[in-house]
Amino acid sequence: MSTIEKKISLIRSKFSVALLRPDLGAIVGVVLVFLFFFLVARDTGMFSLEGSMNWGIVSSQFIIIAVGACLLMIAGEFDLSVGSMIGFAGIIIAVTSVVWGWPVWLSIISAFVVSMAIGALIGYITVKTNLPSFIVSLAFLYILRGMTIFIAIISTKKTIIGGVTEVAENDWLAPFFGGKIFTGAFDWLAEQGIIQTFVAGTKAGQPVVSGIPMMMVWAIGLIIFAHLLLTKTRFGNWIYAAGGDAQAARHIGVPVNRVKILMFVFTAFCATVFATTQVIEFGSASADRGILKEFEAIISVVIGGALLTGGYGSVIGAALGAVIFGVVQQGLFFIGVESSLFRVFLGVLLLLAVILNTHVRKLITGAK
Amino acid sequence: MSDLPLMELKDIHKSFGNVDALKGVSISINAGECHCLLGDNGAGKSTFIKIMSGVHQPTSGQININGKETEINNPRDAIDAGIATVYQDLALIPLMSVSRNFWLGRELTKKVGPITVMDFEKCNSILMTEMDKIGIQLRDPTQSIGTLSGGERQTVAIARAVFFGAKILILDEPTSALGVYQTSNVLKTIERVREKGVAVVFISHNVSHALAVGDKFTVLSRGETLGTAKSGEIDFQELQAMMSGHKELSELKK
Image (cartoon, rainbow over all chains, first blue to last red; front, side, top):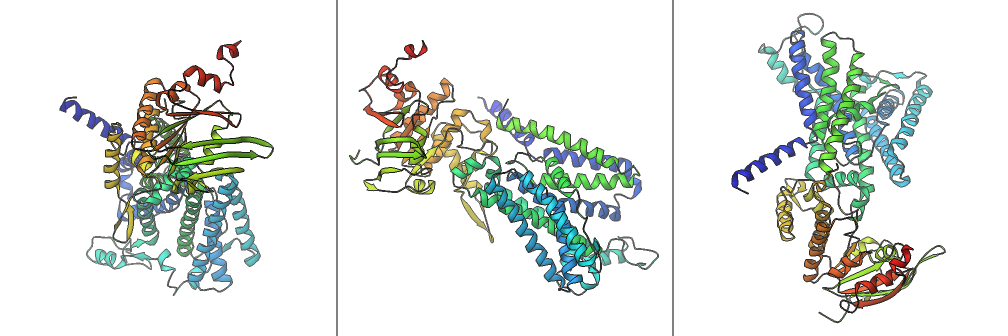
């Protein structure tokens, strides 16, 4: 081969490697979605600081659960109990702190411990019975939702438990889930006139955006953690292997069962982060919270380029999938389109993503 | 070559309930030798290599490694004793890169601050050198295993086992799913590995593939050893006849 031919083939191979990035579809999707809303919704305030905060928070919510679902899907499993887990963890916090009078930090830690233990149980049952996690976690979707409503009803005769804000007032742990950071910086920016302030009402004089909510901090933190874990560590290599071909991985000495169980635990952790931020934010827990969240998480992950069969995917892709989700949902609101159309859009997008991913899979595995 | 066999299996019996899969199989394996284990489907080849690699334990019989009686209770024991098995289709993970596959389970790591991460630079450069040695032209260490041909995948799996110190390499039907050209590449790799002093146990039901690389041939039939012959002592017809239970193929066709 001449040097020119070599260069051409190198460029070509780099190009095809770029095409095989799992998150390419999501990157293109995000660009298109932003372009679209920038063109149609520029005048609605969607891209002002306040408007951006709005879709940013919604995106962050999706990201928190998508990151957990992403690693789990790459490890070759699903968790359909995520939505029920969100309701369950929320009710645990509210019941133990408001009804039983536990300090809020203890309630939060308890919720994490119980949820992660249930996550481990789902994982344990899945690897020991060799049943599809789809079915095992579907069972827990019902078990957890039922338990949540049951616990709420027997302890308060209601399915919504309020009063968390009052008991969480001077708690040291609650601000890690409900507070905002960089508030000083935002106050300063408002004083300089860079950020607008409220002109009337009880908040008059305060900046319209008073800080970065902890929900966003969690979202970014989880993305960084999961991305580094997956792509840089040996444990990440095992996650890919467990989902790519569990039997082959076992033969080479990878502790596949441990990897899978830990990923169920991580998914439960993410669900509990979501639940806790919501409980602290709203000051209440509701037994029906989190319904359909498991599917929204899975859709984000699939839009992000992960294969439903496991072994392939990207945390960044899943996060971008979640951003597409958040921007479109809030964007339709900004431009005043009937919000039910959001689900239509989602279904179409999911279908397109799965078709694209299947095609990419064929390219990678060389299957004709 | 030393006279002491690397591994000896004597009078191995294995029963699953009422079924006797192995009824007294003996074989001895020497360094730098390619020992072919031939037999028709159901002859007990798979059961036998699973005993060698620690997946199954024999019902009775003796296993000596370097002259010492040894028990292989699980795959880990076998790996620790230098026995590596390359399974026909369970060797590599197609969606993962060649580099990630090669180092799977034995990843090289380095410290970045407090975090231990994979040392991709070192992993990739060693991989490229190793692939070069066995004649696989990799475009890129991050290309997926799925982009390699079946023969190249077998070769990568063999190279991996040898690189990580296999003294006895068990190859389970490595050529059965391959075309002629790819088969010859895999056979060349076996030759190369043998020259390094590794003992190769080559399981096959294809007599001509076995004859191409084998130093010794042991034929299994219905869980028993029909005998072991050295290269040159036996020809295609005889081996084929032994495998088919002394019925000529032409006769079977009738």
